[in-house]
Image (cartoon, rainbow, N blue to C red; front, side, top):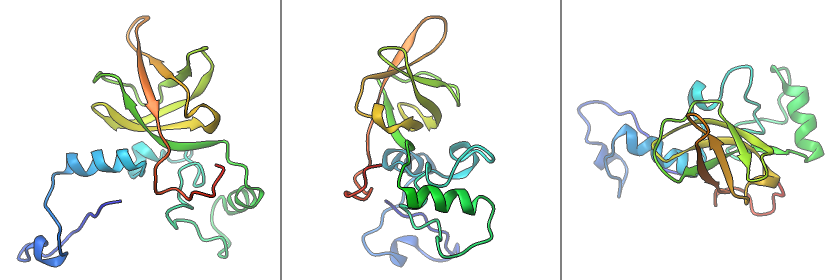
Length: 163
């Protein structure tokens, strides 16, 4: 999935992790979006983002044996029933245009497939209904114009997962 490291300013990061290379924040976020990894309040809006829809269980970000945290009962019940209809997935746009966070993603038939969360240039994250991930999708931009997008399932997701 990539690395992000904070080191002492006197240390050379390339010596801390073998075969590493330096990059820019923009590169890090682009890689993160490509992998479908959410980070921060743009990708995980407080009060809106749900842990399972945000793939936190796939990243060992949820403990199902610990209790007493906000949303624990709903999260555990949903996890154990095994039905998660929407997930945060990487999306790629057909061109680079400004996209509003929260913009509705539509199928070619005009049905709501989900909502765009955040991104940069031609790549980002969207919370989509899984049944529509393989379909041709678009969202409306200025006026009646639309921009096409394609969604994908990250390779690091568990293969046995139906959702």
